[in-house]
Image (cartoon, rainbow, N blue to C red; front, side):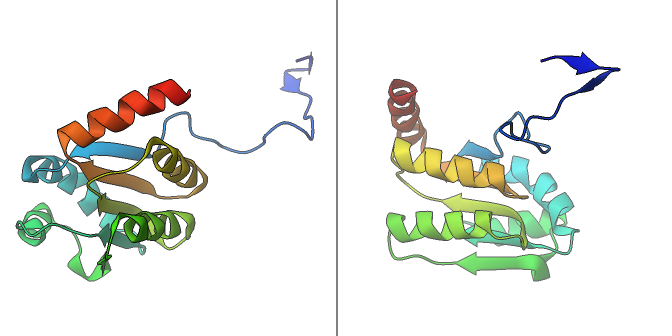
Length: 149
């Protein structure tokens, strides 16, 4: 692109804005250890006046882990879904809204196409997404998504 006195010409067809170069949707192992590692980041995000959304939190002591890390428990919304499709929809809606600082979801399986849709929603949003999956489910989705790209 040509520049004039150190500034670039702004073409209306180019994307403007402050797009992040890294995805805001992150996959994590579904165990308690991964949540323990993530908890300090969630504690920091809970200090904002926005919600932390937990979609299908597991039966293990997630509440105690988050309390020990200093997460503001009054800023947590819990969403329970009947199936994976409903869970993916809830994650996408929470990411797309402007009221959340983070969305944390436990979805056992997710197709590569659906992962990409959630990833795009998280890039447009002003919040981070964390998806907990088992190791085998994560590997399957990653292999299939590599075929797509």
